[in-house]
Image 1 (cartoon, rainbow, N blue to C red):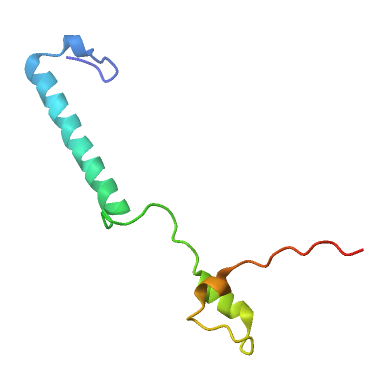
Image 2: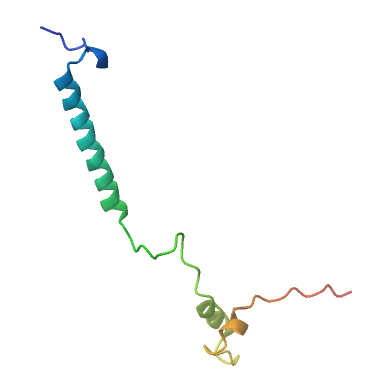
Length: 89
């Protein structure tokens, strides 16, 4: 009879014991992969990686004010950052 802290090495295990150990490891591995897949999610296979780009038109329109004449039909002009001005002496 074995005591609690006397373990056998892999080579000391019999054939059925090795197969049982490998089957248990396989089930645990599949369960771990499935859990990660369900927690993280499969997602859309056509989705791009990373965070979405910020809405440039909405930010530009919010900063432009109501009386500036910038409309949603002018997204490229509204999305341009201000150009630096040369220093004046």
